[in-house]
Image (cartoon, rainbow, N blue to C red):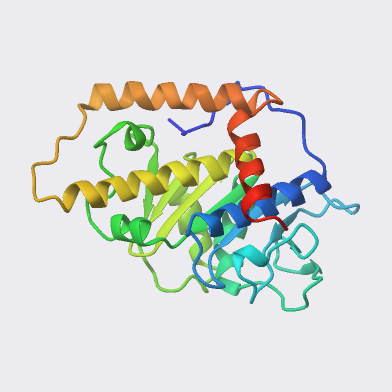
Length: 259
């Protein structure tokens, strides 16, 4: 099962470039607000409509900017070969960021947004062999829906893209072992919500296992049922032009971290 994905789900109205830029800038700001950034590193990318010549394009943060500095106007437009199409800030993009994000965008055209983080909790869970455990309702939504990719060093080798894509497969959540997490969304909103839910699942696991008591994972059938419930809810939202949670997140950004 691919979390939040369904081949039969009807997509929402396709957003235009202005809307994608606004949503992506908001995604950067909410990640910063939630403490899920890592200095000037890690990335969130979004697919743009094809260019006039049919080239595939996506947006990435300007290298050297903190997440809370990213705006709709200073995002960098890159094609899938790594060619910079538009760079308002003038500092290009991070090479490792291009490697990971271009790999997914080239292979997964359903992935409108790819969100990669290095959080303490996410890195901690990525550093244990068991990965994320179905310890509670939050983490149960990811049951059977997480892929794992072995650490190969800082992602500068373009040949690693094929292995990232192969490990991710049709899933939307990838645990980069000893490194961090990556999620894909059919919209920027979906990617952000998945990332927030994954982060609190990792935090809860770190907290639970630090208590010195006996972990009590959910039975497989209960975890699988819960995962299906979450997946159906994501499908319904993506098939609609109404997303109450994303609207609430945008209001939070407007109050707490306006551009």
